[in-house]
Image (cartoon, rainbow, N blue to C red; front, side, top):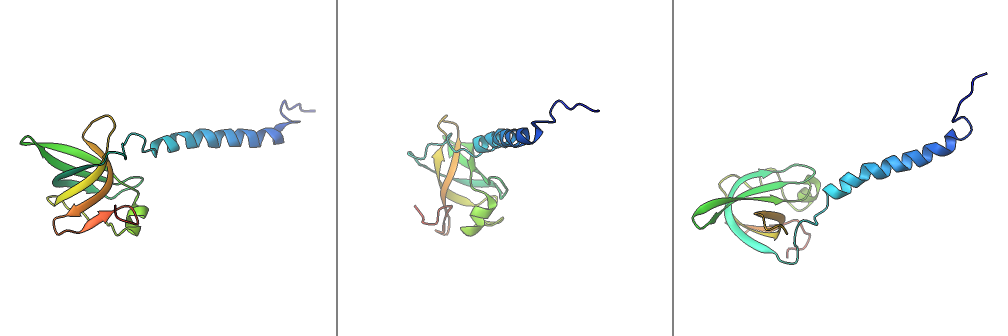
Length: 135
């Protein structure tokens, strides 16, 4: 006769362990997707030259070179996911290196150079935004 320590309560333990594992797995994901580091109440407009456009998941990245006192400063601007951007008309070639654009961002609360993408205005006047209604 074999004796199993968990034989009598194994079925009841599995759902509890599974729920706990799911909660632990979602904590880093929710922290990663937080935009708490940005200040949407104080948008900033910057003008610069596109260094790169990374049309990637989970977030896109626009790297913009902005002149400050005659020195180029790199701004890393975080955007939405590819799925969200496609629905708003963005694509992998929306921004090309060398493009001159004006971008409105929610700046980093830390004061570092960069922020979250709000909208961009291209040299030809085209306005691009992640929102269904341009702001």
